[in-house]
Length: 279
Image 1 (cartoon, rainbow, N blue to C red):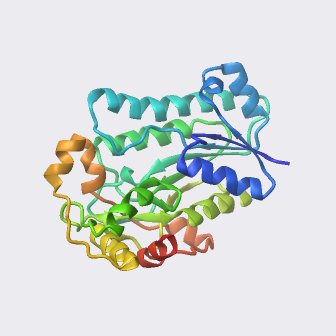
Image 2 (image 1 turned 180 degrees about the vertical axis):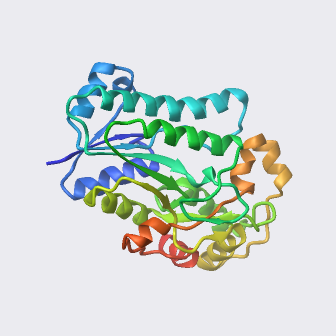
Image 3 (image 1 turned 30 degrees about the vertical axis):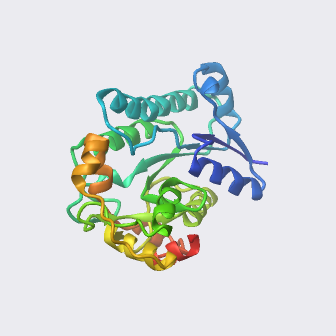
C-alpha cells in the first residue's frame, strides 16, 4: 500500500483528495501542525511516504493587511521550506512532491499556457517564491497552478450558490475579468494522472475553456433559474478586502496546455457544464 502525505488535508481540496485516494487503496496521512514543527517526526514521515501533496496556505480571499500578507507568505513559503528540508534530509525520499501554486502567478493581459508572463504584484510574487521553494526538493517535483476550484462541498462555489438561488446573484466589478476554473472531479483526476505517470513538471489546473465573471454569472443564473441583477461594485470589494480585492476584480485567462498535450481528458470543459453538474 502506497502512502500519500498531505499538508492542508482538512481543507476543501485536501479532504476531497483524502477521500478520493483512499478509494484507490492509498494510505493517506495528514501532515499536522505538530508534525510540521517537529523536524524528526516530519523527516520520518517523508521517509515513509511515496507521494507528498503540499496544499498548505491561508485563505487568499481576505483583507490584505500587512499582518495578513505575512501570514499568506509564512503559511505557504515557510511550510514548503519545512517539507523540502525534511525530504532533503531523509535517506529514503518520496517519489514525487506535488506542490500547489495558483494562476495568479500570471499577469491578466493575455491568454496563457504554462509559459505565460508573470506579474510583479504581491500575489504573483508570492506564487513565484512558493514554486521556487518547492523546486529545491531533491526528488521529482510537480507544480499545480490552480484556477478557482468549483465543487459542492466547499470553496468558492458553495459560498456563491445561496445568493444566486435567492435571486441575489450578479457580476463582480465589470464582469469582464477572466475566470479560470476547474471542476473538483477534474482536479482530483489530474492528481491521479500525474501520480500514475510519475510526472515532474508545472501544470495549469484549469478547464480547457476559461470564461469571464459575466460568463460564470450567466451560467449560474441559468442553472438555478434565477435572475442575476445584483452586481457587486468594485469599490465595495476594495472597502472590504483592500488590496485583496484584486483576487476578485482581476483575472487570468489560463489554459491547461501540458495536461492536454499528455492526453489528460477533462470531464468538464466549459463553465455551463461545470455549473450544471454542481447545482
